[in-house]
Amino acid sequence: MGSRVHPEWTELPPECLLGIFSRLTMGQRRNGPMLVCKTWTNLCQDPSLNTILDLEAEFLSSPNCIYWWSPEFEEKVNSTIQSVVDQSEGGLKEIRVRHCTNQSLSYVAERCPNLEVLGVTYSPKVTVESMRKIASSCTKLTELDISCSYLISGECIEIVGTNCKNIHTLKRNLMQTSEILRLFMHCTYVHGLCFETSGNIDVFAIRNYMSQLKHLELRFSTVTDKALPFLCKGCPNLEYLDLVGCRYLTSDGVTNGISSLKNLKEIKKPEFTALLH
Image 1: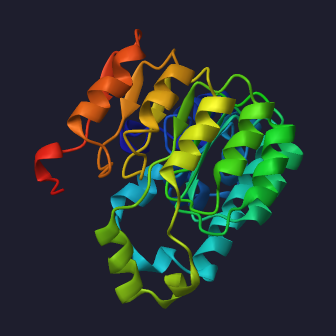
Image 2: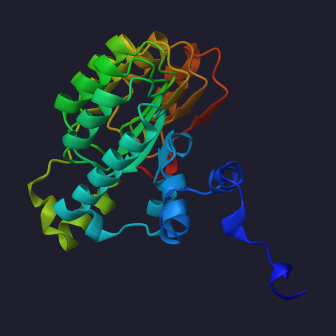
């Protein structure tokens, strides 16, 4: 029986290997098949395996890592993004990353016109500069996640909403105060960064420029009872609304605010009993 008991993986045809590799995450491919041999490395760079760049699994496996908040780590993320963009040969459709910069997003905007999903979270160096390029070049966007990226302002929401009419999902979650304080205690890199935003300004931009939304997340936003009805009346197609941690909302304010949403299927409310007024 000898050596033929186990399959010779190196003898599998490329189409079989591509099928196997397609079931792995980006991180699994980079830490597995790409380290085996040159043939497998080249196969992992096939455009068909690089239509999705999703690094969330890797980030979630090591939560709250202070090392991520550094120029060195941002450069690693930028390098990864640019590498996948090149390998996709313009076919990249989904990006979910953290800690990137304007540099890599501008690179995406120039080369990925078919992008449909963009998740650029916890990225304090991303500004209106690159988001304007994304909005003008990637008009097929259907989902945008800009959670915890504080320099992506209401103006950015306006620009993207004006150019990308097919967006049905927006995630604009913010960090808890305790999370921000922890960063300031343990990471000097964040000391010059701004962690302030106006929830009501965001709401007005969303209402005016993304009225077609079906899924909206505003965790830990500073949106108020006065602005919520304005948002809900302007986005009548909302089916999912997440308001967890919105400390300026009251129970009556939420009830009255969402009363106009006839298609609402699920809402996540703040813990009103935990609030002191």
